[in-house]
Image (cartoon, rainbow, N blue to C red):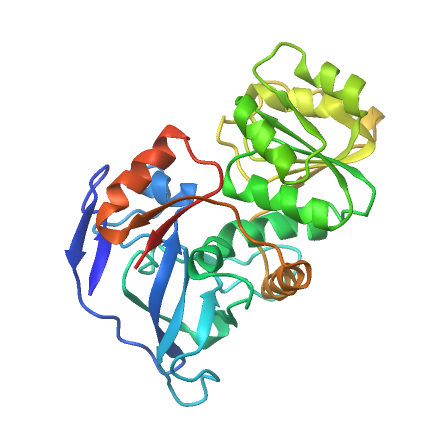
Amino acid sequence: MRAVQFPAVNELSVNEVSDPTPATDEVVIELKAAALNHRDLWIKQGQYAGLKWPTLPGSDGAGVVAERQVGAGFKAGDAVVINPGFSWGDNPQAQGKGFRILGLPRDGTLAERIAVPATQLAPKPLHLNWAEAAALPLAGLTAYRALCTRARLRASERVLVSGVGGGVALFALQFAVADGAEVWVTSSSEEKIAKAVELGARGGFNYTQPDWEKTAVQEAGSFDVIIDSAGGEGFDALVDAAAPGGRIVFFGATRGDPNVLSMRKVFWKQLSLLGTTMGSPDNWAAMMAFVAEHQIKPIISDVFALEDAGAAFDLMARGGQFGKIVVTL
């Protein structure tokens, strides 16, 4: 079969590799589409733990069951989506030490076929095409847990989603709007803010502007829930933008650790700082049901053929996407 491989740091090729051999509890999926995450880019750049070469990347994928093992519960031809989080563990509050994400160390979805445990599969939502279904898993699960499990979002609350344009941020926007929240966004791009408004955001703020958080509070009011993945020196502005009793949920630190954390503001405003990563099997099931109930369609930025996977990674490295980058197989 054909698959994307990283032979070494910052190297990518599309090669013929061996077909997967399923274990007794696994099924082989003929992938129709896969999607990129920043995790894949960081692996390619050698900026991730547990690296090995060659690596077959990819955490997101959707396709049809090609083979069935006894008791797997799926039949050949079933359309499925893959949950990329493996071995969460018994504690719903946090993942266990055995937690792994598909795509490293296990071979990932940027390939024509993959073998995964049947327990990782869910029926493809009927309202989604293959590209949309492939775009859903990792980012959708992360956004759902951040909003619904960690922040415990309530309808009519005011939400700020930072850095809109990436997959998780867009899902957070879509999920919060569907749940009846008042949603605002930040971005360094006025064009991305305008697109977010088309998706239901009330408005947005350019975080490169001085004191943008003061403008945000003056225009929108302070925020009950803030979703962030950047961290860095801009994190203190989120503390200022949060409402008393607000919750700041973060699932990444692409701009590094904050240089300063205004602890006095945090305790005086009774803020909750909540870390989150991916989601449990229960979160996965709830997210899939939420997407089906509200007929949510992932936002697709660009679609590439497998042979053009290098161009897909280049687009992500430039940050030029608005939505998920999908590779068709």
